[in-house]
Image 1 (cartoon, rainbow, N blue to C red):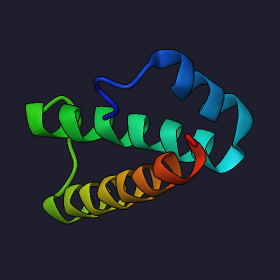
Image 2 (image 1 turned 180 degrees about the horizontal axis):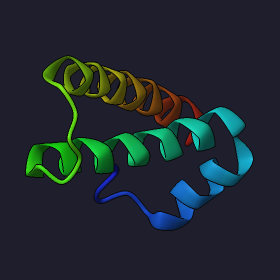
Image 3 (image 1 turned 135 degrees about the vertical axis):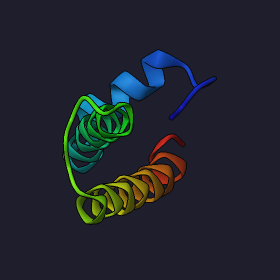
Length: 72
């Protein structure tokens, strides 16, 4: 999600901001579940998959906002 950004900067935000850490971990968890569902490894219904995708996108949007605010 933050490709091209210095890993040290991400690590600093993850360690220094509880909201960023929680959202980052939740986004990673949802990313894996969505991928597994799309590959057929995780059997879930379309409604649940759509909800997970919306939650993942909301987490990404908030992470992007936090990143822009906190990295300076």
